[in-house]
Length: 388
Length: 90
Image (cartoon, rainbow over all chains, first blue to last red; front, side, top):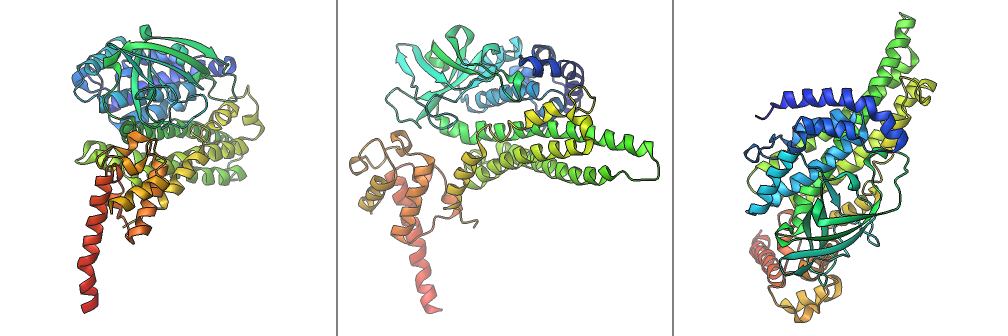
């Protein structure tokens, strides 16, 4: 039976504050995969949260999924980001599987076996340009064969399956792409490089060479262009922003606790840092409101009549892109402000007010699809938008 | 008009095939037109036909083929023809 949204969030809090928080520093220090927290999520059937209940999943709404990512992000941003990326992959399959019996069966399998799916969109020479591929899918009888040099695959070595973009055929133009599901037995991975980064160290996202040979039914029908604009991009920007919101919320909580301690030490005097806290809480509200507002709007469009059309529209794409840009900037500002409030207590790694990990994790936000690339896309779309 | 559209595609769509010999119904996205290139095509069409695509037309489908673009341009030109006499009489 599916848990209610409030039960789902309660479980997410328990997992985040329990297992997530307990191992967050070790995950960060050693740049290792957050096995314990992901296992806990699997145990509570969270990997099927975005899968409809008729296929065995929890059938959670966009708003619920965003809230879960935010909650997990408060305790271990790497865990939250791994989980968010998995949800993005399941959403692409759920929403674009059409009448494919294979993909319906596969989603049941994801729920039953709590399979973790990673994304393979980046590629050597095109980098993070989502809508361009070099590798193409070659059909050999009933097999789909593809080799792709990915610049990064988050938790690639820890996933049970990959969802990979490639040209429809090796001869197709770079933007005529399809999405291919690869189960563990369909591919081999060869690591190319390491993952010793400033932050988000537990996502374990080095480059890989993927060599795959899968049944042809695992190539999703339809065009990746539609999957990207209608599902992958909106889910990414909303769920990533939710993880970042979690980081910001955690930083604010530490700053708030710090100011309360100061106030208790000298009752009658408002500590100077309280003013800064009031200021940063304002930014936090702005960020939270934006994330929730866009998540709600997206959910309405996805469930409403003519949703596909609206999700592919320029105004919606601009709104999604603006959410990503603003939340990636605000999270950094908020964590930095919180650090200034707590001062040396936050700068010290072994303090209960430490914010070093939060700050380093937050720095990744502007780089996950570079903000300049997104601004360039928006600039281009604004050339034809009339706001009529 | 189709020749004008093809000329604009030839200049701005950066297709993998010659726009001037492409079938009317051929899917331009499958011959390499990117979202960025499609914006340039929209701008060139607006300039060439002195029209403005309203936001409701700013969809992938509107610019997916020569035939689709022609239908969109004709719809906008017809609408402006209807408006013009009214403007004169006013």
